[in-house]
Length: 234
Image: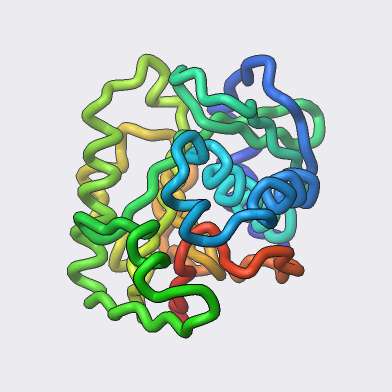
């Protein structure tokens, strides 16, 4: 069932024009990511310079797949190179309405994933330490606050997508909403993305009274490793 209240906020008022980005279906952008990622080991992927944009492709494609499945049919617009202008990608809906998104990843402080993959070796099992929900919320709050303090010129019309890469279980989006409310108000919308789910904790002008996780549609992975250690939040 489509999330009609979210669709009203995301597809309706607050839409902005996208720059001259390439347009993909969510599956097409994921396929592009996979074609770049597949020849590399996980260590190479996280240690090699210049691949941040490729990792962002994974986040944008999976988020767009969730929006397309749960909220409204859409495509995703993204450039191969981040030109450092406001917005990392955009979601376009039927009728041409477009929303621009800024992307932020939150992970443990001081984490170096390339070193982790090198130390564990190819083919070994990976057990990531779990993070307490309250600690995870502090990390999420900090990531949103850091973006808010950049004072984007179009911040009131900008959607923020936070990729939560913390190994946190039992993270309640309603609790995250309450904890982060002081720093979300400046954005048109704030969304959370994990390896398996996504959800909205702030959307203008729609009031999100009871945020819920929405399960991302399944995908056939073409690589040994996802772009990050996807956490289980069930």
